[in-house]
Length: 213
Image (cartoon, rainbow, N blue to C red; front, side, top):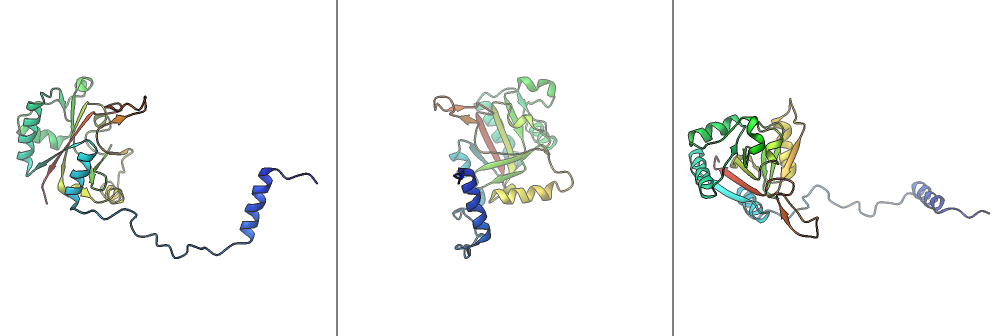
């Protein structure tokens, strides 16, 4: 008799396993509990800690006026130029703080700093969830060397699944075509294991969090 091929042997074992089913030895495993360790601090503190660990900078703000003051200080101290913001709500905040910026996409190719809102902040990983549903579109999250996010404490959620649930509620009638999570500045070590910042996006990431709780 011709010897069976390896493929035939495997298929025979599969057929036998389907015919002679065994009782599940792991039937008492509980799948509903979280696989992550409990977070020790409140969501806002956990987010700030994880953001800093991933290379970002966290700046707490008591209100919108405080955002304007601290943002002006950052721009002056770091000599930041060519600031761009396309979000209407944030544009009003910047105007009230006398911060010079552009919202004209004719200036887009020359920008150094992009200021955007976000959809959610995920405390588990210190990540920022953004989407094409925001007024900033898609490009402003990846093009400038410096990305500044202005968010509210009420936008912090514990886990990624909570952010996804929130997105479904927020955009129930017009779900965005693109959703991205940002965790720290862009980096890569693909070439000779040498860390390079800003390889695929901003090399600096700032989050200004407004206390609205």
